[in-house]
Length: 307
Ligand SMILES: Cc1cc2nc3c(=O)[nH]c(=O)nc-3n(C[C@H](O)[C@H](O)[C@H](O)COP(=O)(O)OP(=O)(O)OC[C@H]3O[C@@H](n4cnc5c(N)ncnc54)[C@H](O)[C@@H]3O)c2cc1C
Image (tube, rainbow, N blue to C red; front, top):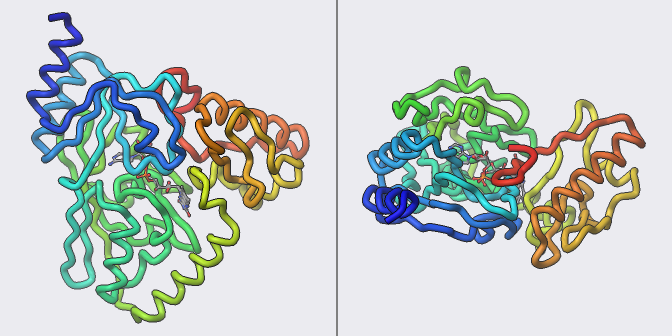
C-alpha cells in the first residue's frame, strides 16, 4: 500500500461518507470543474475535527464547499481535503425571535422557514441559492439586506481545530466579505436575530423580487450569479454591457445576453473557458472605463489564479 492509499484509508476510517476523485461539477451551480482528491461529508463535529487533523498532519490544503453557487472549480480539480456539509449539518431551530441554522442548510430553506414562523429579516436570502455556511462566508446580500444585518454569532472550527463562537463584529463583515476565508475557518452554524413580521406581506415582497429575477437573470442556464463585484458607485453589469460584451463567447461559456454580469455555461463549458472570459471582460472594461473589475466568484483548485 503506498502513502496515498494509506491516507485514503485513514479518511475512510474517520468519515464513512468519503469519496475519492469525486467529480465536483455536480456540486456547483455552474456545473463545471474537475475532481476532488478527497471529499468528505462529515456526520458530526468529531469526524470533521479528525479529518482536519489528518489534513494538517500531512500539510494538505482544505476547501469547504457550500452549495457551490459562488465558486469556479478548476478543470484540474481540487487537491487535498474538500469538505461538503450534507443533511447531517442542516438542522434549523427556532426560539422566540432567534433562529439557529447549521452550515449545510440551504439559506433559501432557512429564510422561507423564518417567514413561515412570522419572522422578518432574512427575506432577501430566499433567492440566494447558497448554504448557510456560504452565506456567512460571503456575507451574502440582496434587495437592501445582508447577512451581517441579522447574524448575531457564527460557530466555526478554527485551523487549530478549536470550536469558537464569534460575534458579527469579530467576523468583520464587508461587501461580500468576512474573515472566514482568510482565517481558514469552517463555519458550523449561525445564529440570527429576527423580528416579527406579517407573513403575507413578506411572501408578497419575495414573489415580486422573484418575478423580477426571472425576467432579468438567465436562470435557465447554469451560472453562478454575479461574476464581478460592483465597483463603488457603479454596476459591473452596466460597465460590461456598455463595453459591448454581452454575448461574448469563449468555448462554451458566454456573457449572458440577459444580464451582463452573469456568465452562463452553454453546455460542457470548461473552467478555463470561464477564466479566459473573465480576464477578457476585465481587460476590455479596464481599457474602456479605467475600472478594474474584481471577481466576486471564488476560483478554487489546481491552476486557479484566484482563490
Ligand atoms: C442564480 C444565482 C443568484 C445569486 N444571487 C445572489 C445574490 O443576490 N446575492 C449574493 O450575495 N449572492 C448571490 N449569488 C451567489 C451565491 O449564491 C452566494 O455567494 C452564496 O452565499 C454562496 O453560498 P454557497 O453555499 O453556494 O457557497 P460556495 O459557492 O460553495 O462557496 C463560496 C465561498 O464560501 C465558502 N464556504 C462555503 N461554505 C462554507 C463553510 N461552511 N465554512 C467556511 N467557508 C464556507 C467557500 O469556501 C467559498 O470560499 C447567486 C448565485 C446564483 C447561482
